[in-house]
Amino acid sequence: MNKTIVVEAGKSEKNYWKDIWTYRELFAFLAWRDVSVRYKQTIIGVSWAVLRPFLTMLVFTLVFGKLAKFPSGGVPYSILVFCGMLPWYFFSTSLSESSNSLITNNNLITKIYFPRLIIPASSVIVSFIDFVLSFFILGLLMVWYRFVPSANIVFLPAFILIAFALAIGMGLWFAALNVKYRDFRYIIPFVVQFGLYISPVGFKSDIVPEKFIFLYSLNPMVGVIDGFRWAVIGDAMKINIPAFTVSLAITALIFITGVMYFRKTEKKFADVI
Image (cartoon, rainbow, N blue to C red; front, side, top):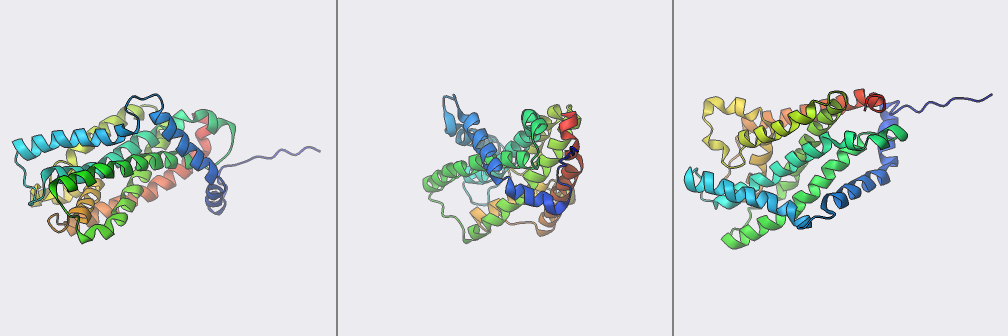
């Protein structure tokens, strides 16, 4: 008598996370494929990952540093801005890529079983490669201005890890929502653009009036950017501990709920994608 075997994605939490390790080669393949596709047949190639934040940094330095004359705490304004640009572009690129990752890989999802979380997570890894490449410009800026990084830089991996958690959490939320509600592909660019203006990319957080600090810190990128600057630049970029705590709590909430919502909905991806 023939038996029908039904393969169900992540039947238990234990098996699901084991499956992610089992399919680690697929994870690496998807990440490498996305890297090669992104820079294939482009004129400037990998340098685009560096040019984008660099050109934006020039504009922000002119507008906020030269025209508006925002305070920089004695730090060259270009370095101040670029230290905000690095984590911001990592987050925004990760969100844009991961939110569309399930749609662009629909043929793969409908044909074979594997933990679907691998797809948006691999998109974040690709964005992280761009992030690492952009450090080259930061190094050149420091040499140009003869600026020495602070000893706080040993804490930089912790803030990069927080940025990872936020990028993956938001990416999982929007990736799952984008499968069911395709209107989210129009919402995501707006979220990215709006987020740039309400995040401390072109300015220091201490220019925000005290009465608005709590509302301001509800943006989780505030904690990431302020922490990143503090690690690279030093105590001239003081962290508002209450605001940072709020941003960190929201990051944890987004990451946990993002994983939970993605796991709850992923079994239906193949049916509705």
